[in-house]
Image 1 (tube, helix red, strand yellow):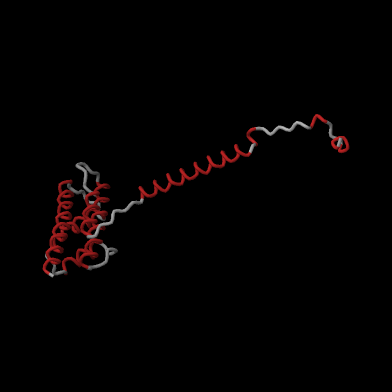
Image 2 (cartoon, rainbow, N blue to C red):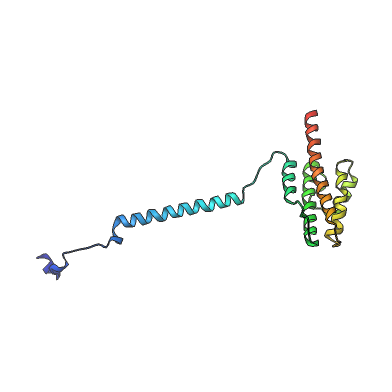
Length: 175
C-alpha cells in the first residue's frame, strides 16, 4: 500500500544485486590488487638490490684488485678498446695511489701523476712509471699499442697492488 502512494507498483519489490557488485567480490578484488602491488614492489626492490649491491672490503687493495680483474684485457683489442682500457687502468691506479700513499689527487692528469711518481722516494711506485708513459701516448696521441704491452701493463698493475698489500701487511705486523 505504501508503494502505491509513492507511485511504485509491486513489480519493484524484487531487488537483485549483481555478483560483481556484492561486497565480498569487491573485497576480494581489493585484496588481490594489494597483493599484486606488494609482490611488484618486492620484485622492484629485489632488482635494485641486486643491481646496486656493493661488496664491502676492509682493505682497499682487495677492492682495487677486484676492480682490476674486471679490466682484464681481451686477446684481440681495437685501438679504441686499448685507449679505453688505459683510461680505466690509469684512473684505477691514480685512485689507489691516492688512497694508499696520499700522493697527488686522482683528478690529476697522467703526465702530472707520472711526475709525482718520479718525485716520490717510494720504490714500489716506480713500477707504475711505464704504465703512465704508455697511457699518455696511447690515450692522447692515439698511437698503436701492442696487445702484449697491454697485458704486460695489466700484470704490472696487478703485481703492484699485490706487492703493496704485502708491504702494508708487513708494516702492520711490525707495529
